[in-house]
Amino acid sequence: AQKVTQAQTEISVVEKEDVTLDCVYETRDTTYYLFWYKQPPSGELVFLIRRNSFDEQNEISGRYSWNFQKSTSSFNFTITASQVVDSAVYFCALNFFGNEKLTFGTGTRLTIIP
Amino acid sequence: DVKVTQSSRYLVKRTGEKVFLECVQDMDHENMFWYRQDPGLGLRLIYFSYDVKMKEKGDIPEGYSVSREKKERFSLILESASTNQTSMYLCASYSGTGSTGELFFGEGSRLTVL
Image (tube, rainbow over all chains, first blue to last red):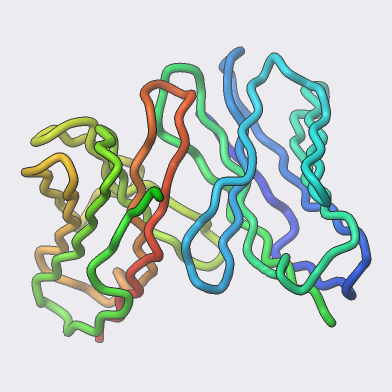
């Protein structure tokens, strides 16, 4: 069975602060994919990143960065110099090789205070 | 631009009513999904379909059925709505096959059952 845990239910930070959203996963599969999705107030989830289990390189995209550590089964997401537009619910998700079904975490609501 | 459209953003129904939630995608994707989103529980998979007239149960199919008569349309049916089905319902379609695709979501349908 697969499981994704996002222990932080809600986080609030002041604008321009850095913030890290934690994601811990469990899977017995050796090949799997990890995802992050953003759900802004409009409701539509937006894909941010997919990372496969063989690629542990950190990734940076503008103010966003992701730290994948297989040793701790974690795939954490950091926003640098946060902005009000980053306010959203963020979901971490997992699927295993050859399967289209994603298992989602419970989400972290991030509020950026102006 | 990729588009998943859910017919109703907000619905209010009474206990025992039959409810149809419609979802249309314009990307010619084979795989489509219905998720339910509840606070503290994240997204849970209700049903998915990998082809016309093909469906599979997800993690919480009880009280729901689905219909996929055309590739672009995937409907979620509550045969007899109950108050515990008050929730946000999210439709998604999946680009590609296997685990290398990406989920595209609609804006969600918030259902209240009185």
